[in-house]
Image (cartoon, rainbow over all chains, first blue to last red; front, side, top):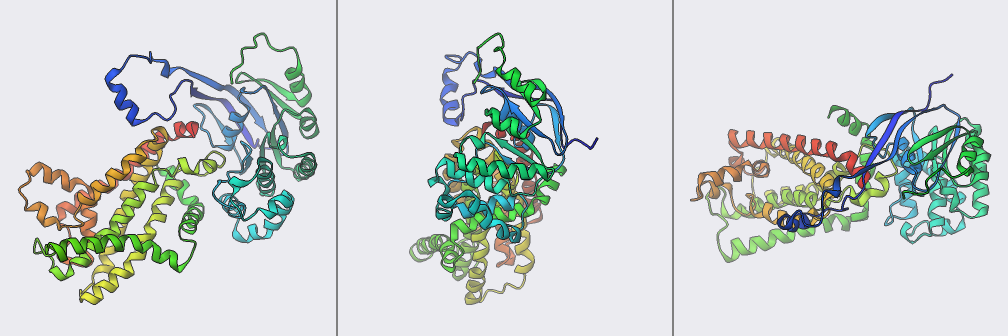
Length: 259
Length: 270
């Protein structure tokens, strides 16, 4: 069998639960004089959104990731994309990644759609010539609404427009591994149908897909293999049907759900 | 550190795009944009020229440069300072402001602060022709500047890269350091030989330890090298130059280490 395109060994990442976000110098200065009042060392409490994950994904596979909210699906995609670093174990990705995570391809709100497409595509290694050759295609695919607004800042776009442009761009990158995080949930039905065709095409070319979704039809349509995540553990690594059964099956003992 | 150096080198085209975008947003790629970038340093220069030369008649103090050349001394320091000050204010937010890109795309994160250092060198580079014209008008011989100016630029780039790496990563964890930057900019402006020649500090009645601290600031040496491009007599002594080189390299290594150290936490926080 070919070399795996994604290889995770005992992967884990740790978050601090009650870290006071945006710790400020001013506050630490002020609190210095009345320490130990209110915060009895809660700050060191940590949790593992993902831990002890090991798996291999081979080129051409399509993997669906299923799980309730807050079980680490997006965290896993971020680790694969390399935008989060594991605290334990490692994940090796052989080849470039086309990521569509957090419903965004990395667009910044104050740049126009055109500038964002140029910037993100060039950061993904496309030359200016390649971008120019694909630009119209990308914008056409994203729809009339986006085409009319291509020269206004992305912060004025609706979330649907943003996702459409992002998907359109990311799916046209030549990278072998495509990560999609619930992005298809946002577009309308017509756009979804267009996306399905594109993804079918990419899979037919032998690209690898990792898809996070809550939609059963989507998952069964594209993915043969499924991961079911529960509270940060990879509970099922089997066919997509097995993973869906585990997800739909009798809810596991406790309902205390972390979010 | 070597691996991340290699990573940054491989991403040099990414760097190029980031810098170009920063500049395009700021100057809209126009001639007026170029002139605009000169407005602030020239304005500051004229103000101090007015105060120190016209009103107080103190331009020639220290006796190392003729009074009529004071404006050139002043401007060469101010252009260098503008670069430092631009980095202090903009590199601080280099990661927080570009979080959309950083949280979706796997490029070496160092390119974001480094990109800001390069983009902010634009005003400085734009100022060089102005300085050359000024020197020609004043009849200052600048045959040696070609040798000295690159040294000054290199030292300053090394130092500022360290500063940018440090500030950008720390700023993610402590977001109010951005506000201290205005004060630090002031401190740098008055605490370096920009308005006054270094000689005045050296010959002042300040206690020796204050003078030593003053000169440990690598920017002092950097500014003296900048000045030496136009006034060779100001080239720093061997001691000051070594302090400066060591200081710049230390800053770079320290900034890089802090950045590496904080990177996993920064990615979680963004």
